[in-house]
Image 1 (cartoon, helix red, strand yellow):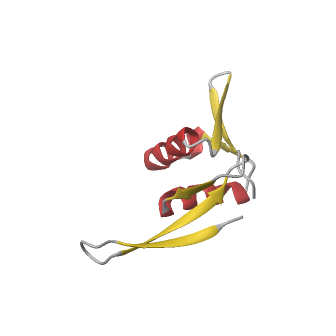
Image 2: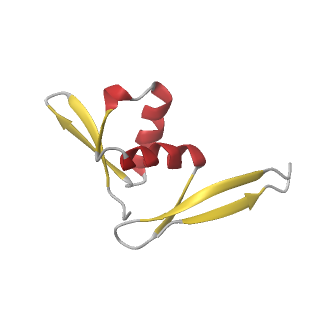
Length: 87
């Protein structure tokens, strides 16, 4: 289940769009636009190699690991990421 939420800041009236994803335990979790874009890369491949990511994407992927959206695996010094959410 994917939802799009709109947040309007009171200070500058800017609009921020966030994507709400459903974790495996059924809880909803908001993601930033950048996190959503990096998560969309899993549509092309089930596994993403860390070496294929630029430094900013690596930081975003770490954020997704911390949110338990993505699983990081280290096999023989080869770091890969796999999606852990419902599609």
